[in-house]
Image 1 (cartoon, rainbow, N blue to C red):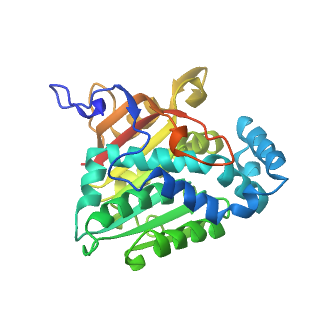
Image 2 (cartoon, one colour; image 1 turned 180 degrees about the horizontal axis):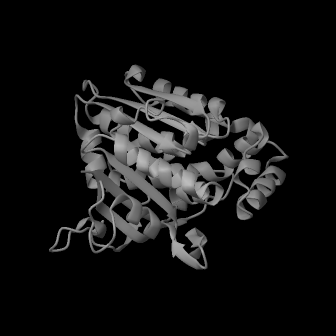
Image 3 (cartoon, rainbow, N blue to C red; image 1 turned 30 degrees about the vertical axis):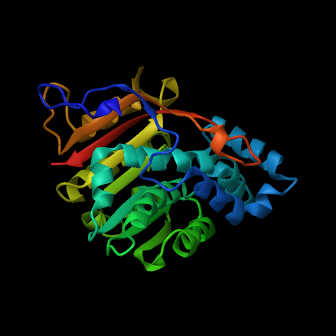
Length: 313
């Protein structure tokens, strides 16, 4: 990816990136799609799926995030429709970030990742895809990965289902991968409940805009909580839709959500005296599904988003 460069002053360069459809370090696209075909075959075969998808789509369009996921049927419909493409995109994104890739390549380390708003398990599958892809090349390595997932909707069954599939069918030793799910409002949880001091990576993928829309000041305090409690050298990855959809209104002005996040985490552009530094970014990044590699009953969509990878100073 071209977004890895640094300027003369050490700042990450903003670029337009294309994330590969399938990164060579991750599990194959076919294996990822097979996970969804097997774990969610009943919902994919349901005659009610199109209706439920439209219902969820309408709630998301109107930013009614709580209502979009307030029933198991809605959550299953969302997983069947949107999560496969996101899981593929996230796996490729994780592998395309140098620092994240090197973290997973370590053959002995125990790694822990917190996925905020990751209940639909896109992040779980994406992380497992990279972890399993690397593990397959060195099955005797002692490295392990634990994924903590927190979400305000109850995605317990879905996180458990996909994690069990990974343990049983993707890895020689299923005990090397584990996950846990907490159903709760992340803005109300403590640093100890989130195990922030133990996390190597925290992800907020398509989550910050939702949090800012629901509770702006509490979201600012949550980002400050991360800054205070995440350990030195840990990473924070944020993605959000590129374009005006991710603008936040403050007073009479609109600001890109990434501008607000950068200011809180990194500091003012002229000072950059915050607790985090940006090590890689893209203002407009494309992930395009390779239809030639996919046999799935629902059309999977391409994604355009921005991302920031921060490192704790």
